[in-house]
Image 1: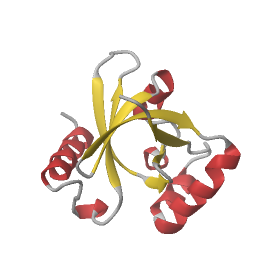
Image 2: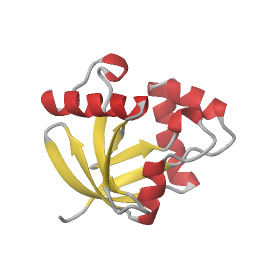
Image 3: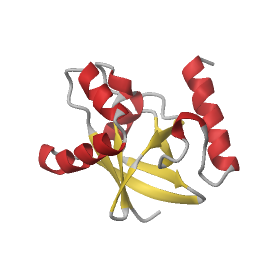
Amino acid sequence: MSDGRDRNQRIIEEFRANEGRVGGPFEGAPLLLLHHTGRRSGVERVNPMMYQAVGDAYAVFASKAGADVDPDWYLNLKANPDAVVEVGTRTVPVRARVLDAAEREPIWRTQKSRYPGFQAYEDRTDRVIPVVLLEARDA
């Protein structure tokens, strides 16, 4: 298992053991676990990620720490937008929708304001970092 996968697995275990709370660099930050389907493998994947509540939905950010390529989870959601999130102790079926520029801008601005690391991610890349809205759907 790679270092990134090991780190993610530790975060996932801590999240589940502590009703959605974790320490370390994510301490106090809103965190969810995104269950998505691999676009080529068809295998369920789980990624911990920060989110921003937008009404009853969850905005997530395909930053990949400022890499010049989109993260796999984002490409998977584009191929199969039906997913599930764990938020705290709740499990919510969601449908992913990539936001257009007008919807994205205020959410992205707020995220950069609350968590300046996202500004650093933006500064590292020439790509526009996608914002994905995860909206509840019927199971």
